[in-house]
Image (cartoon, rainbow, N blue to C red; front, side, top):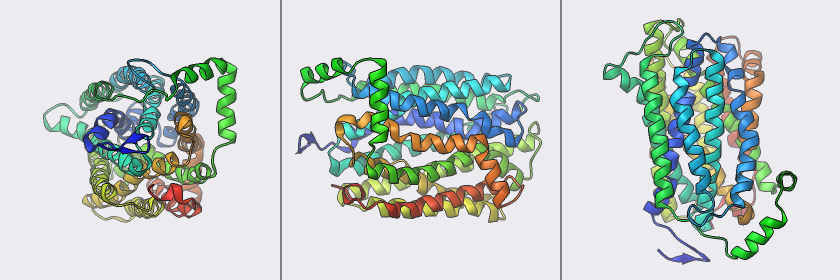
Length: 444
């Protein structure tokens, strides 16, 4: 390990340890994204009602993440440090919500579980992003976020295949109408354990840098304490966000609109269009839904291998982050559109492999570009504000943006949601051309 500026360059395993909690966070996201829509349908939701049931989750993120970012910037605990207290709080509540979600017996219970789960994940997630920027010099930022993506890919692949694996070992995949199958319940229970233990591992194996001048830090914190001062500072930072952040926001908007569309509509779209299964109480539907989880796992697996490649490349040479992100997003867009065109179910692996390339880039390149463009003393709050460009498209999608747009542009069949997702990712890819700041687009 050697110093670059005032920060030491870290080894792969040091970065792995401080990012390992993302394994559990992604377990939660993969189970949430792959199976909450299935839970909603099992409990009686119509396909076009699913997005509104997701609405509370992004609304909560819009509020929670800037606040958590602001608070974590102002936190210093002599044992837990700056970001780790938020890891722990989020882990406790996420674990509880993840465990109880599949035991919902009514739609309002499932929607409430999703809301609590998403709010709790938000408490942990962005401090993890800020931690990478806190700990690494600029020349290692791309590498650090790519290692995070590698861990996320592992979590996505394993979690997406859990219900299928449960079925293979004999756990029932069907239940009475309106009851969640045991395979899903076991998968969520395992996810809860993995989430808590992986975040605890990061807390125990990672140390944080204290403020350079702790007394000055405490004085500034005391001078600006108070509820209204906090909200004033958050809004001032929103108004004064850097130009690069605004341009990245456009890329993020279309990227996350695409993936939110996938999470809410992939199961009904693929079970209906590819497997011709529509009766949610039937064995054919539940087997098809498990298969969708398996295919969704492909994008996690490919994102993992893509992250491995990028980790090797970024450890050796400096990359053009903008170019990598643009090509990756366009590849994912082609993958989504191909779901409408395929003739055999196995071809879904190809489609989601292309989506996996985009996912690997979405989870790394924007954060590397952002972290090189903002005040390091405000890394937490800017990471939290940056989340607005993730949750706003989800809110728009939830209140009818997906349903209205795909029917207006393409037609009534639910598979056209995947075409809409593909077009959105391609727009996001070309939006990278707006970013011209070399500090953001290239490794330091």
